[in-house]
Image (cartoon, rainbow, N blue to C red):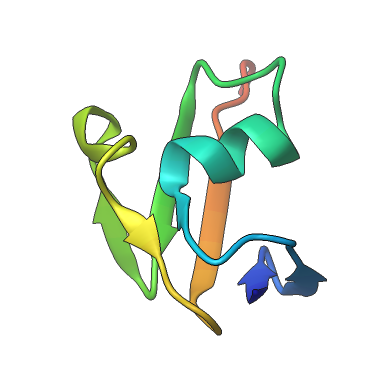
Length: 68
């Protein structure tokens, strides 16, 4: 499966991935304070386990930062 994550094309050896599974692969140790959008639509954290990404989807992972 080919996905575009934060403007970078990546390949995954899976036929289906939930947003949560994708995050477990990409950022397994830092999943607090992040937001995820798939094809410019925000996916609520409560839906990460049931929302499955599709081939060629564009995913944006945003991490909150502290400071000002």
